[in-house]
Length: 319
Image 1 (tube, rainbow, N blue to C red):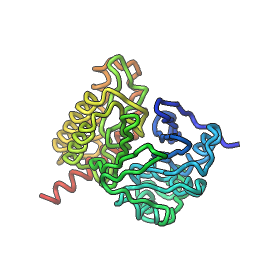
Image 2 (image 1 turned 60 degrees about the vertical axis):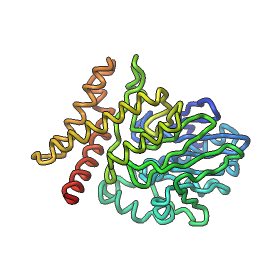
Image 3 (image 1 turned 180 degrees about the vertical axis):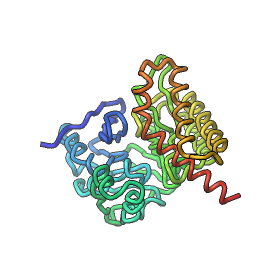
């Protein structure tokens, strides 16, 4: 019997599902149900797929009822399981940013990129096999593309900043965006009396702070009441969080530029990002011990520092 994932039913027919990557509460995908049809937004890794199917069974949703699988972008913690999930859902179409479509049809480059960073054994352990998706089952969603989930409109807007192959999904029914990584990360362990804490996700290799600020403006133009984050869960109070994220982006740029010529640049940037996060959490009266905060943020700060390093190198080349 397949293991049921941790999940939480939210209003508006939405379920937040833990894809259980690295630890609980780190990465989510969402199941949207409407009038007998269903869609997954994000799909985790190939290792996540059995538990997603187990949840369908628990909710008595037939595999044929799933109309769409929608990764917000093709980073493997969001889209690595797409091919394996599609194999199990005979009627589903994969909806992906036009820049990412070819990588879902032929994941060779994705695999090569991840292998170059982590090594083949680690990639297999983290993500499992990357299964190609037949081109005939792929919808490349241009900016403004709309799809109907049995009468419930999902609108796709391109939201660069974290990655150029990133879109977000506007669900007018819940007045919320499924934001992937472009509304930052906000782990529920850090929630405090002042609500959620949020910070940028500057993973390599396409961080673009100017584009990201425009994306935040575009989000706010819809007056969203909530954001469904992949990392992790639903957050409200969107305007204040957007302002906090904007400040975070500007501080990340300031840190990166101030350390651009530093010896051991990567380690210094990573250390500065961690200190910034710990300072912000302390200001918010976070009750977790510092060591626990560091453990929860270690992998993210490593990737954020890498991404800022790539961005600095691009800035230097452009100059």
